[in-house]
Image (cartoon, rainbow, N blue to C red; front, side, top):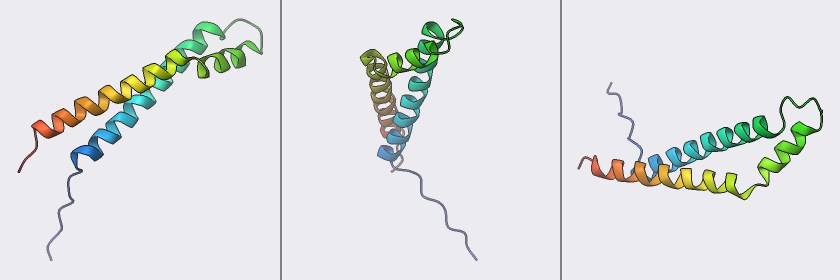
Length: 86
């Protein structure tokens, strides 16, 4: 009985997965840094939720997430296309 080899993911599948991963990491880092800087440890219970709301509505955070996803996708696509085997 022969085993079937699993197909390698295509370059666009790889780029999509890396872009999603880069965006998720950037989102968590930006959200954590913003909440810790603005609303953690102040002693007021509502400050955490205000800081969380402020970070989720800040356009800079979403720009960083989008740019990191774009950079991750482009770098992965270029690397995958350059190392592609016929």
